[in-house]
Image (cartoon, rainbow over all chains, first blue to last red; front, top):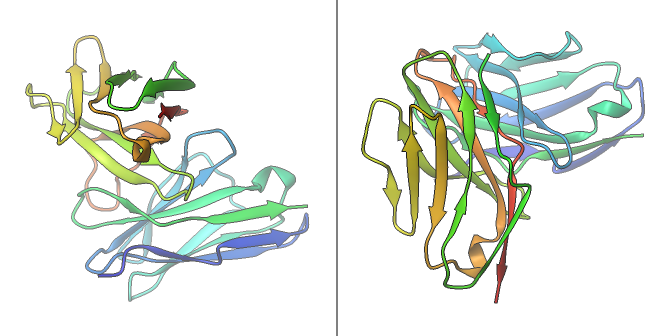
Length: 111
Length: 118
């Protein structure tokens, strides 16, 4: 049974560029959440998708957007990248409100 | 808004000994969930233990147990018989039970780095 997978593992972008991160949920899960974890900090909630709709959003600007596909996989898009967007981006999936299972993350570096 | 505070940035313990990690939280809700997650150097966040606020009994998972003090808004993690594989960052997290499908935001603390001394 495959767990939560994320791609790519690492990514280097330049300020002002756009980036797309991808997440496949654990088999049987229908809800996907995204978190940003800056170095030395705890994860911060970005948003959550259920039934292909954004259901809840954290305190992040509109430059952060997402999408959920019919197969429950999800993308996180960040436009106009800033140096401060450098972080580990974690995806988590769940089903019926039970525990969230996390993926290994995507390390984004903005130069 | 809910907040989670972990006041111990780093802790260390001798192998086979017991260590307790502290966590406090602030909320106006009466029903909620609390979690401890472990993040090893591999970066993958792993659920260690979960506690429902309406349950008075403290949760236990093998060598891991919690001391949940609802009135004091305290949720500490005790690791018994510490092993080298327990070395990791440990995060305390809060989730409202008012959350339904698609509304399951986790609020994390800043973490405690646990070192196991052989």
